[in-house]
Image (tube, rainbow, N blue to C red; front, side, top):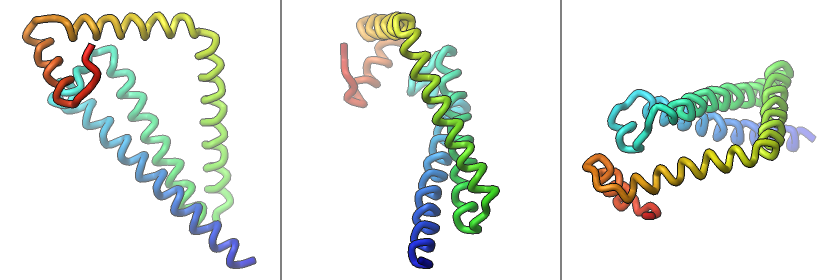
Length: 147
């Protein structure tokens, strides 16, 4: 029985360590995009997309905290940390279910907003202004879909 317990302990630690590292990467890249003017130009971000970057910063922080609670809770076998870890995962599950329901309820508005954004981006790709030429070159450089 001790072997199974030890296996579970270390496998949970490894899983949560990878989870924590992913949170660090998400947080680091999101902060870099938010702070760096060069990154904002490279990704062609406008003010409306900063809220998405801010959301990714928050997601990175939450993932890091949950990964930390899972790692430390597994290694120290702390019921308190593992309970907080479980509650955090449960809250994320509930939020995902709510987001899915809201996505189904507001499907038409979401489709309209996405289509509007796609049409604006397609017009930008077909434009001949100097700013848009740079955008088109970056699309070709990264081998993205050219409309």
